[in-house]
Image (tube, rainbow, N blue to C red; front, top):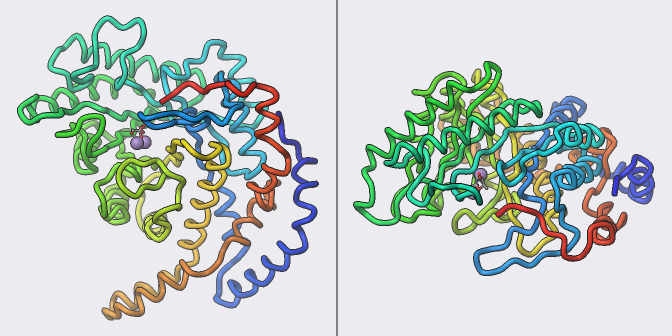
Length: 425
Ligand code: LRH
Ligand code: MN
Ligand code: MN
C-alpha cells in the first residue's frame, strides 16, 4: 500500500475548518507573546525522527507475542511501512537498520524502494548480543568485552561488516549497544572487561569512514543483572572521549535507573559536545520501550528544553534522532505515529519557553517564577501548531485518524496476510 497526496488531501478535507480555527487562535496568542510562528513551524518541520527496522512488528515480551497481522516480512516491506508513516506525518524520513536482522540482499532494490518513498538510511546498529545461526563461537559471556580474544575479534569483525553495509546505503553512523556484563559478583573482572571493550571499540573506530560517527549506547542492566560494562552515560562518555572526535554518547530514554535526571545528563553531554544521538521511548519501571510521552511527558519536555538551550549555547553537533520502541498491544504503526507526535509536541513546548525570562529568574533566585515559566510553556496546548507544521509539509492534519480512515492496517493484512511476521526481537 502506498499513501498518495490525494489520500492525504481527501482525509484532511473534513478537518480543515476546525483545524484552521484552532491554529489561528493559537498563532495569534503566540505572536502576542512575541513568538515568530512561521519560524516555529519551520523548526518543527526540520525535526525528522528515524524509525528502527525492529519497531515495525510486534515485539512481544519473553512471555508471549501477539501479532496484529500484516507485519512487514522483508526489509523492503519495512521500508514501505516507514514510507506510510512519512507520507502521513512528513516527520520520519529515514530507517535505522539492525544487522543481521535486516541484512540487505539486493542493494539496488533496497535503495530503489527507499527512494520510492523518500526514505534515507540513518545509523546502522550492530548486534553482538545474540549468536547467529552459522556462528562457531558464542557471545554468551560477552562480545567486545570477552576474555577470549577470538570472540572479541569476531565481534569486532561484525561491527566492521556493519559499517561496510551502512556505507553502501548512505548511512553516516554506527550505533553500538553492548549487552556485555555479568549476572553474578565475581563472574568477571570489571577492569579487564572495560579495557577489552575500549580496545575493541578502538579497532572498530579505526574503520570508520571520515564523515561517520560512532554512537556508544549505555544501559544499566539487562540482559545481565549484576553488572553491565557500559552501564551509564559516564562510562559511555569516557569511552567516547578516549576514542576520539567521531565518537559520541547515545541516550536511550529507557536506559536509566528510575528517577534519573536525564535532562541534566543531556545538558552535561551537550556542554562537552558529546551528545551523539537519542533513542526515544517511555517507561515506568525499566527498559519498557513504551510509546514516547505516554508515561512521563513533563520529563520529555524538560529534556527538549535542555536540547533547545544546548542548540543555542553549545557547539554540540546535531544529534541523530530515533524512536526505539517495542509493541505488544498496539498496532506498531499507530504507536510510531503517536510517538512522533509526542516528540514534536515536546519540542514545540520547549521552543516557546521564554529563555530570557528564565535566565533572569535564575539570576535573581526566583524559584517560583522559574518554575512558572517552564510550566506555562508546557501547559500551552500546541497541538494545532504541530498539526499545522505537518499539514504545511504535505502531511495529514491528524495522522492517526487518517491512518484509520484510509484502512492502512486492513489493507496491509489483505496484502501480506494475517500471519506475516517481522524479524527482530
Ligand atoms: C537495547 C536496545 C538497543 C537496540 C535495541 C534492539 O535495549 O535498546 O538500542 O539495539 O535494544
Ligand atoms: Mn536503544
Ligand atoms: Mn533498550
